[in-house]
Image 1 (cartoon, one colour):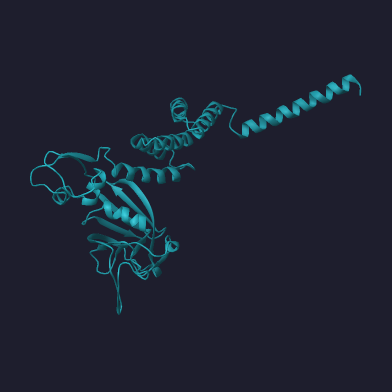
Image 2 (cartoon, helix red, strand yellow; image 1 turned 60 degrees about the horizontal axis):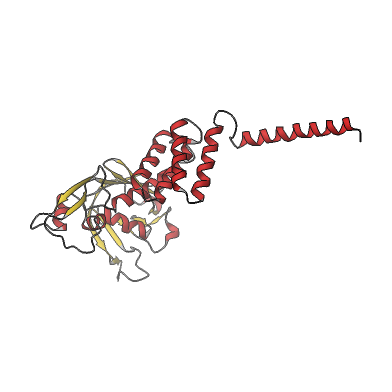
Length: 304
């Protein structure tokens, strides 16, 4: 083959290969005005995968600070929240997720951020870490957890979890974290989701089951009683708490509308559907969590 022809073939091949690489790099977001942001995200991903949280965090913060409007910034905020979670830096993780939801509400990362924010909010609530929704409290002579919980409109179980207490015994001058947020619940029957808010702000979203044939009543109700391991009184029978036939699960939060409330489940596969006799049904772990958080008197609004 003549040398000139060989050279021509090599040149053409190089041009085709180069063009292919350019197309690939563009598709990956490595070129153009946002290429540097994409490269930084890749560096952070590799550092996080290798367990180098310090490098991952520094790289993500550089990306977010330098390229706040990049199409990769929402993913960087999500990753930053995850990196902080891995280090149990709950406040920093919460900040990252909230910023993502405020600035990129319509992004593909928003649903993940909302789910992670809910989990982090619970971690913070159940930990000694104080937030703007908590009050430091010094135990006085004659105090009890029950009295403190009633005064601050919270629950004894939440006080114990937030302060790492294994019993109800407290001592004068003991310092406690007292959660002061006012919780409220909204159940949306259209998508079988329960929104828990704290001081009118998003706290956590839970999947639920509601009444078949739209039988869960709409309106605003109050939780008036809370029962651990409830007995199920069905027509003609009393079903004990530990029976596999007891559909109420481990917790009951009763409304001020007789016969209705929030409870657990013996069939997780039905969560997300309209299948109950009218009550709101939750995964057992979720209803136990909710039970610890919300006191009697909490408002529950049910909407279509």
